[in-house]
Image (cartoon, rainbow, N blue to C red; front, side, top):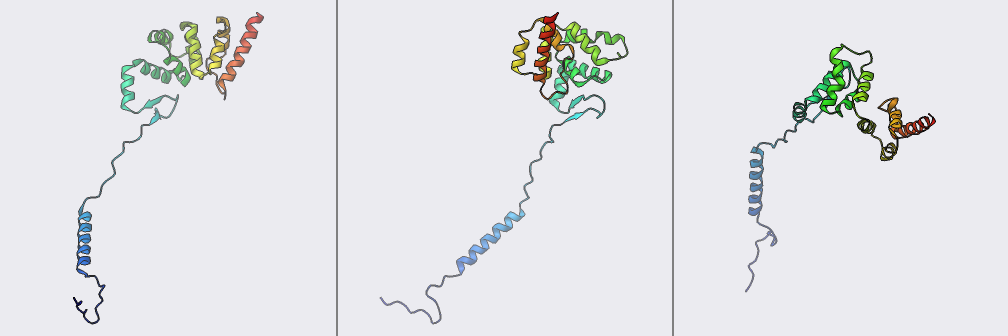
Length: 200
């Protein structure tokens, strides 16, 4: 059959604009609906757990500002006693760490004389002397290793020493201070102890 002639001036490939107008109206309605919805707020984040110096002065007694830490202190009153002792007598932090390695009965024995005096002239030396008197040698060697974070090689070497040699290694101080390599210093102490004890 013959095709109908297109009107003059019209293009046979022209697309009706009715569908485009409808699509534009739909997009406008969707945009308006989204604009009416409240903005999504980011979830509030809890403040980070912090460890702050108590009071900012004196010995570095750390206060853990968390509920878990408070519960732990309540469950272990000895930790509160140590913190109080360190603050009262201005003890060095590591001496408090050493006290924390004692059992409750040992702790009471160590600090008992302090209850009868106001303040020793050298509180740190006094506490360490009491630890030496109360705590068995084997436990003090373990404390020495833990306080200085000594390597396995040093631990093995300590295990070969006599009681007198072990006492000599720890005699100058239970803590190796101001050393970049505490294990190396401990090995030197061991060598010195071996020579000096054998020479007697």
